[in-house]
Amino acid sequence: MLSLGPGVQVVLATEPVDLRRGHDGLVTLVRSLWHADPYSGTLFVFFGRRRDRVKVLFFSAGGFVVYYKRLERGRFCMPHVPETSAHIELDASSLAMLLDGVDLRAVRRAPRWEPTREKKRIERIDIQRAS
Image (cartoon, rainbow, N blue to C red; front, side, top):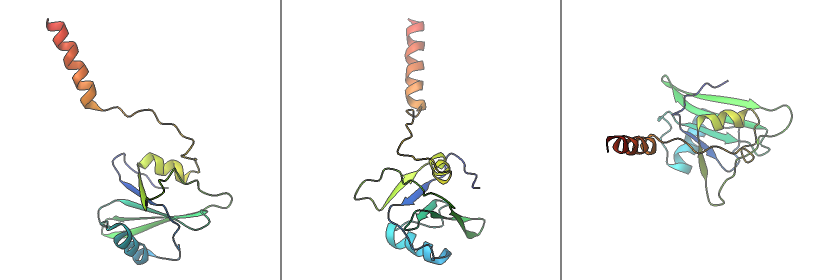
């Protein structure tokens, strides 16, 4: 089980990967396909061709970690992917749901709260009270 904070960046490969690759092979993919920094703490997620296996690569405490999960039955459901994308970004909760077998295409999310909008609304209320 991965325990991730809300600020963790997650990148999901849209094309299947040969999961016989180990740490070094996956690091090479991260660098060559996405020109990304594998040492950044970002989690890089790779599915096998049948989508019944997944590997998550990340750098932690001085070394690379590979989290590997194989489903005994069923397949992982890929989220909606734009046709031309080589990867998509997820948040930590979406990754957790994906690894638990939730179909992210069917999940509807509430709009995210943004503090700048709330701050402006409060300022308007304070101005109105002062008048």
